Length: 169
Image (cartoon, rainbow, N blue to C red; front, side, top):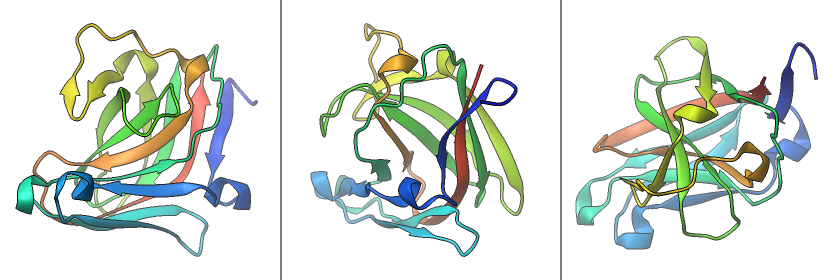
């Protein structure tokens, strides 16, 4: 750790490129498509096409469950390049396929590299896109999954590149 910053995922490292999976709206009849690829510079690229047909409208990626134990940290930083669309950083505190996620919404500005600062206190508990009012607050020491989602009727192609994800104090 340097200056209160801890690396969670650095996509220039081979081990951080493993165990990513795609979950699109096909689980509910939609036809959105997405994939994870890696750029020549090592960034994770989450890209695809969101379709609103068949009551669809989302695409997501997530890393298989593992314990990150971010106790003592205040939030996450992401270095990204985007397309001007709105995304969600999503974390889960269990390893089930379905259940409560905690989301942080951000806009990936087009044509520039930016660092997104996502305080844990700003993550919202959601289940299938709906806020869960009586959910427990996010406990950073219990984070087991990290992922990205695009939704909110943003039909069409999308692409976001993530260089790294870090935790800050």
